[in-house]
Image (cartoon, rainbow, N blue to C red):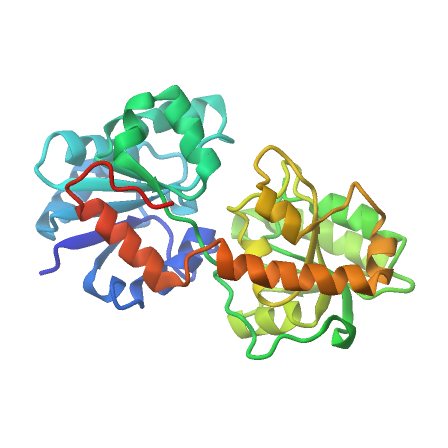
Length: 341
């Protein structure tokens, strides 16, 4: 019987960033001592079943990933947090991956978690500050543990001049990720430059993917879909520029950025209110110069490639074991002022 359990609504083969992260966490030295509670049915009437099954694990410490695509619009995860945090002697923590960008309705419901959880882990300083500004009393029971890439690094990072793909988009194929802007901005370059879109297609966005597929056929952009981890690493290690024009700007939560950095692809992107000074130094702001000028500037590309690799070494945890250990230590820590910078 293990004293630590992690709750998730998504796990491979589900297509979700949290699903991708779970095996990495559970395969660490620390995570191997955890139980996992993974369920697909989160309808409201299942709440008593979830409470009973989680109680049956006898875990003293409970950590929940939130949100995950598997929860859907269910309020059950929120109620589990309230129940175990307030009405049991078990310690309940939540890794809050989204908050400031939620719709008003979703945010109001998420307040149940922010108000009740014994421990709250944010993944960026911005998100923690956003929460504390609105709910000051959570300061002493919250912390920051940044994420790392779900994609591993290639064994040897290729120099810029040895890469055959000029420009790539990598990420989940779904709306509001900047895909349309990528296609518009790259279309005029495809006669002279090799352009690729790569990523996973969540089943609920199959119709959207067909539209993107048709646009790629028309514009000469190559599509590489549902690749495995090794194939993604190799692809990014063969790309000069990863153009990721996020509508809300680059942030530390963007796994596609970290995957690009770790494989030496230079990130060209948009800046916004979530963009840190460190990210600005490691990337290129597309508003400052054209994609064609960027692709022709080898000196700039070499400088930013090194800056991206340095960012991964200096600004993030050293790996999944450090993350898992930080999660566990914070949940178990008796001093509420314990805080990871």
